[in-house]
Amino acid sequence: MDVYEIFAIIAAIVGLLGSIVPGIPGPPVSWIGILLMYIGGHVGLNLMIWWGVITVIVTLLDYMAPIWSTRITGGHKAASTGAILGLIIGLIVPPVGMILGSLLGAFIGELFVTDKGVWAAFKAGLGAFLGFLLGTGLKLIACGLMAFYIVKAVIVA
Image (cartoon, rainbow, N blue to C red; front, side, top):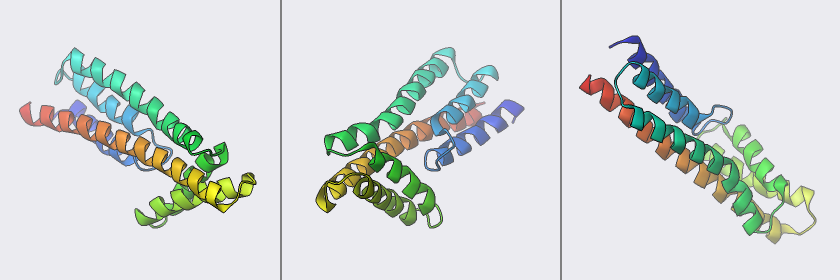
């Protein structure tokens, strides 16, 4: 196993973790693993370019999905912010704390910032939470597939 393979596997693992843990950009870190495998001569240029494009798209969708879903459910930016803060606080008790923290954070953020009432806050909170889940799911899928390609290239090499 060469140095590129070792660092690519580390990038894949960190990328997968970053798909769930806020503050670590999961797909870009995983793509660095693909880039390292390309530099090491283990994957082709097309694979590296396509995963770069997919990484950009998934990263943009991750930021936009909570905004779109919050707007669709009539929510305010506070619901999206609350979902992120609730997730961070929920890291104390993963994965249940992350899920409940995100949902409650979105609900509380919407309830305290707007004056629309409990039902509207619940709806907006649910929208922000669903957008968060969509973004997280997309990141996990992308990082999981990149990790697959990295491990496959290591095994074949």
